[in-house]
Image (cartoon, rainbow, N blue to C red; front, side, top):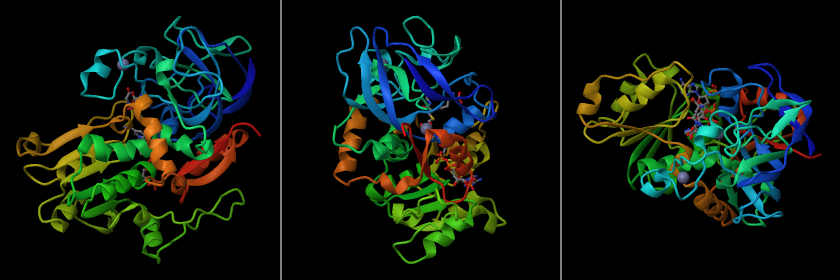
Length: 396
Ligand SMILES: NC(=O)C1=CN([C@@H]2O[C@H](COP(=O)(O)OP(=O)(O)OC[C@H]3O[C@@H](n4cnc5c(N)ncnc54)[C@H](OP(=O)(O)O)[C@@H]3O)[C@@H](O)[C@H]2O)C=CC1
Ligand SMILES: N[C@@H](CCC(=O)N[C@@H](CSC=O)C(=O)NCC(=O)O)C(=O)O
Ligand SMILES: [Zn+2]
Ligand SMILES: [Zn+2]
């Protein structure tokens, strides 16, 4: 079929909206009409050329929701008309990862999704004038139609608003799950969150619901702190741009952050500031930026003997973490998380239900709404003050 998609022809070059051919789904594949997609900082990371797995030309995008258009042979768990969220982290329930009970990573299609093709024939389903276009993260949601592996599709409640629950494809579950599944924060814990973007705020939300006693937000943007100092409920004052929607109740405090630290306000290293504030360090810390120096600080602000630091941010190719091994010898634990440890096909529908029951926030993370045609503007907005998630309407 012919459809429209945003093509990343080269790293950092503006995305180009083009007519794209999307081949029918083959065995074990699902073709999805994408209705809404959000932008995540990982899309920007790969587009920047710093992702060792980044391939061009490609169709980026991995935080979306849509409707199944057709299915290939052997697909039994979804049918045309089902409402779905594509999952960049697959769940086949058969591979040794899925059966281990120890991880949410799945090995079934990862080798193919890492090189931008489908498993069956190691080819792409996208082309522009005969030129194959690589898939991205097994999802490629910056296209009005995409083809994904059946193990990468979560079927969700038909009543769920797709323009909202698209966020449950990445950032919000990642933050919540980092707390609930990876760190397993206990009531009364002291938590530090580095980076108050969508992922960091979702960590704060998860920590609040886990009963953390203090949630220390660390960010270099003091505007975020000014915003939260205003009376509750507060409002982000965004820009005067007419396309920007002002979101009510968007402040770090509303997501559970109880106090703030701006590293720029201190002469001491930020880890020392936090250790001093917390009688020896936090029980749990989360790095939600992708900065290896901050990852070190996040580990080193943890309490001796038991403090656990979770790396959530994605760091560029060539970047490495370091610390004195003594930090680990003396009981601090360094962990990482992918998609917050959630089993995608099993648990994304559960997250959707939690949203429908108002048990988790989603709307509050959406600060902007644009269309597919405005995707480059949406990427620009990501770097602007007040932007958490921008949702693109794919069909106008
Ligand atoms: N592991 C996983 O499964 C997933 C990982 N990610 C990764 O998580 C990270 C966060 O994503 P997202 O929330 O969308 O990103 P954002 O860019 O929205 O959030 C990061 C925040 O950290 C702030 N910041 C930047 N530098 C520092 C610093 N030195 N100290 C304190 N704060 C700082 C940024 O401020 P400013 O905007 O002013 O720069 C921004 O507010 C990204 O690396 C993304 O790729 C995302 C989803 C899933
Ligand atoms: N290709 C990247 C990998 C970046 C990465 O770690 N991705 C996260 C998800 S980020 C979502 O926004 C992840 O889940 N990783 C696990 C995986 O199997 O990819 C690189 O090499 O840096
Ligand atoms: Zn993401
Ligand atoms: Zn598997």
